Image (cartoon, rainbow, N blue to C red; front, side, top):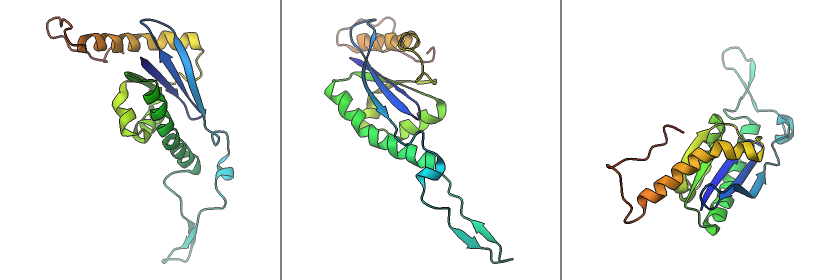
Length: 170
């Protein structure tokens, strides 16, 4: 069974694809409680200040990561464990990870190692707000590729001329 994980900063949806070319079935949705919060609601006070040694001017310390980005990273790490348990319970053979380019990098780095090993195909597209029918249409080529790879990797499967599976066309 293959799984599709579709993410944006607000929600992570998990879908399951059963038999060949069967439709996607929604398993779970994880919602980020801090997604709609304003930056000022996530921190308690202003950044610290320092005095310059040259002219005694006071300057604020600016963190490298905003409070919003930090809350998103914390949430992604939290749901990483939940995703791993869900896919292990469903005996996943592989998954397709779909998110926008920036979020995909953050999501990839926050997933546990066992879940990263299941990740077979990544699509850098923001499809989290797509209706189910449109999402299914966009994901079917990746799922067909995963099914083809599974058929080639089965013991006793005939390989045609040593053909290799690639995802460049996806």
